[in-house]
Length: 328
Image (cartoon, one colour):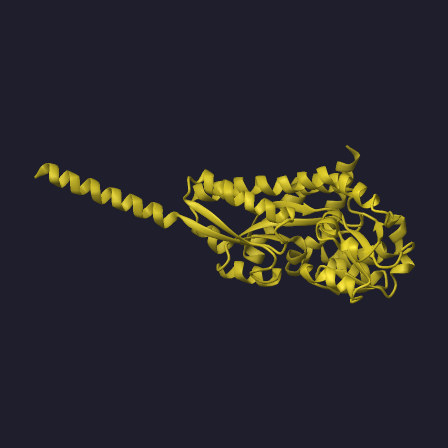
């Protein structure tokens, strides 16, 4: 009888333990706007695989690329409600809600992709993520990035005056809109999947884009003039819904954070490694190349700063950090 009682106690304990384990298991959903071939999506897939392995199959992550769950504004709403667990978001969308993050898009804050990487890895930039839980309902795990911004156009852009009146496709957020408004052009927000056709049919005259997307999405087939300007970096952030984060154990939080941050940092490294190669590939295509620096956009930069110095309190300290890192 005693042995039977001991058996039952052990069986109940085992059942409870297994139930607890089952209750903690999660099938996370991660959304992003980029297509499957993009580095961000590839990093998300790799993160999903590693999290599953490191949790010994307890956790899985379903990836939804190409705006399958809606645009970024819609995904942020889902994250805030807890109906979406995770996302890789452009800082553009974050800046629409928290203007201080617009400082990361300051024109010529950095000069190249290596300087952008150093700044995004700095305590100054990562410290900005502390604003997200209370002000946006998100937990910022870390930064990724795309390459530096260039201008690909249907007709040549040889001076800043050539931007006047041109319809330029932008990611829909205020800092980049204000940059092109200051250049007297017509910033035209369009989702990434619509850009190729918009260039082909003349809906837009030019696009604000990085080397990687120009190549993998073949935008160069519809526009053969490239202004290599490196005028802005383009950060991305990996986030978890704050509602979902509160439900995770300390162990699972540590696991998610360590795994995701590693793959986000890998995105930064990948863009560093491929930037020069992709620039060379575009130069070898025989398209018209014009190069620009901050002097090319001097009046535009001054106009942008006059607006964003007040909107983004972190701008001054980011410029100080960037200058210090660039001098090292």
